Length: 147
Image 1 (cartoon, one colour):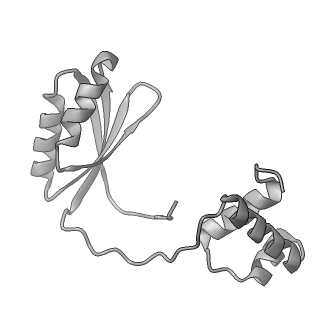
Image 2: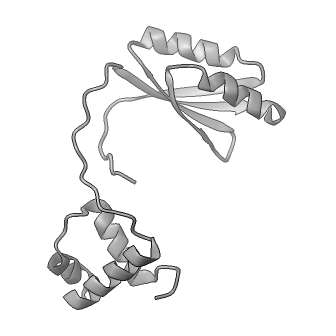
């Protein structure tokens, strides 16, 4: 098999992302191919490192933080390393992504209350080089698929 997965391999991987426990027979039915083809493809994907393992998704313990938010941040690009360093010191910030478009960074926050969220955003805005923020509170999770 080539190093890059072809269309059938990509469909197989997509099915496994949704449910890694699907039986080979069901995978073959969904893909419209023979069970032996699926088995060979799975083995080749595993051998090539495209599939590194199969996992079980377990219920997460309910986090103590009740408020989750996304904060988009426009920054002075020349100060990005210092800004990221300052933001990573904040315990409310769980993840920071670089993004394209009008904003430069996206931060995922978790706090106990909206007052704590407001204070955390104020601290983010006070970081030298942060020009603008836009925030939105996450209400509920409709899909949380493992990567």
